[in-house]
Amino acid sequence: AVASGVLTPAAEEILILVVSLSMALSPLIALSNDALTSRLSTPARPVFDAIPNEEPPVIVAGFGRFGQIVARTLAARKIPFTALDVSAAHVDFVKRFGNKVYYGDASRLEMLRAAGAGDAKIIVIAIDDMDASVRTAETVGRHFPHLKIFARARNRQHAYRLMDAGVTQVQRETFLSSLQTAQDVLMALGMSFAEAQRTTEKFRAHDEKRLAEHYTHHNDDQKMRDLAKAASRELEEMFERDAADETMSGRENTG
Image (cartoon, rainbow, N blue to C red):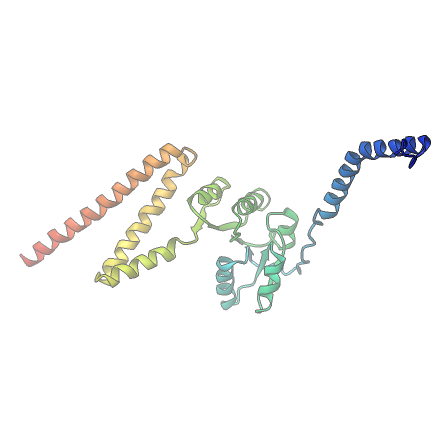
């Protein structure tokens, strides 16, 4: 451009300086922009609901399907409770149907205090998120040891984690409904109500005993696999013995 007379030597020097500065400053500008964007996109600390000081005997932490059934049963018997859920959208939705539930994180100490944990008798932990569920159990056990905890577990490992946190009343969410379905299937196949009920009750007792006995080994995968196989064989043998006893009893009665 200088050779063709478009730029003077002085203008060329200024242009080179501007280009050099822009290249040098580009990374710094990008970093500043990223930092600003990060600050602007960081969500604000949630403002949880203010909870009236009513001191109910029961706190329901988590207001999904499990928590709602517990709460509705309490409401049917006019037993007061405070329900908490960490999803503001879900709280707004269930409130439309007359449910008394507040937006709040039950794993936080200040939220539990506001919900009346100091005076309550029972807390039902029905939180979907397993980590939050365990944190809540730990917080309750640490700061409100007088509270009796009833907790919903998503699966066996979740149950073991809750037991690690000191929870003794753990209900696996699909366990009882699965047993009821199994009983219905047995009856549909021709089994009597009494026999089907006895079968599922024995399975329930065996499985809950196994859950408690295997707890001490739940961090040892190989040991748990071995115990699971042994428990399955034990259950089959138990039903085989029952069938043999019933056959023998039938022969004696006909004899």
